[in-house]
Length: 438
Image 1: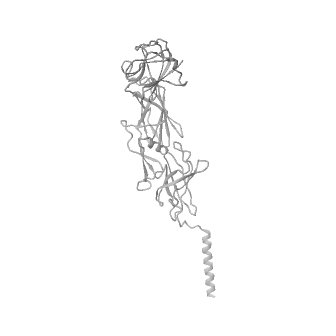
Image 2: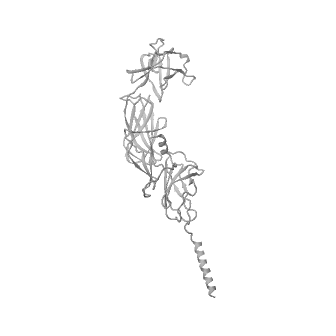
Image 3: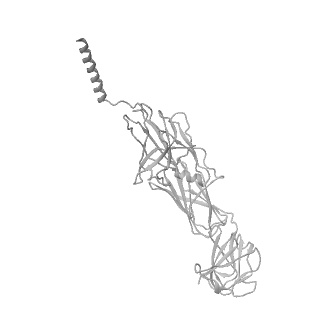
């Protein structure tokens, strides 16, 4: 009888334990793989397209404590969202028993295995970032994206996913130059911006560090297209006023600043449009300088007018001198006339003219000169040759008429028929093409 009662009690206890197990879910007793969802990887502007197989780097805080783990992008068909999975399986795992404790994550694109996370506490940890004065460094910063999240895995075998929304933590500056002058934009530099910062682990924001680029040591703007330049800078909470210097082929240097300083907000694109008109640079310029600075992406904000001044070396310039006149003028060309070439590329110059003289002696004709101004000729490029107008064609109508071997001295070139002509002169070879305009 006693044994029967004991067996009954054991059976009841076992049933109670089984019932309790059926009604509760135990905390995870093993580690589980961390997975991520991405909501906007293809909607962030100012970056290259990120396709399937691209890699991002992920840092995880306590209790996982993982550094710079490579994750592979897997995009959905709509190419607007997707997932991240470890490049190597089981390299990023929730801690054993972790259910309600949240872990902080930082993800950045593009992946770079050598980028360390430094700092003592998670609130202080950061990635050091520096934009160098090279096109490659600017291009990398232009593509750079960051995302931060905090997530607890929860219970069960299938933990919660970590949702990431990438953003551009820097600032993009674009300067478009509307150049209608006879000069050519050679290069552009910028000062007054900062290129160093810390991408913070806690929220993927940037804490700007270091000094601004000094006015006496400006950095290059990167070519962004014809007469367009860009660069990437760190955000600024205090108002700043970057200085842009545009150098022309003639040696003229134009300096532009904003009418009023302004803050630079992370994830915004700032575009300035600058108008340059008139003749090539002189000490007193007749160029019309104008511009606007607007914020795009995202929200349009009028930043006010741009102001600027010019300093110029005057420099040397190419002229056509001889029995010529302007195309719209009369046929009264004589040797006292001179027309400046218009620079349309770094080594390509153009001038349209009316050729008046029909004399064939060496004292008449045309000559290409190189001088600071019309009263200070320094060198002459020419060759004693008579150009047969019957073989000169319209631009694009066939073979160009090419005169080679121009020297630094010599007699004039002559055309054997009056008329309207165009010369394209190439300063790298001292050769030119001549075309008929009528």
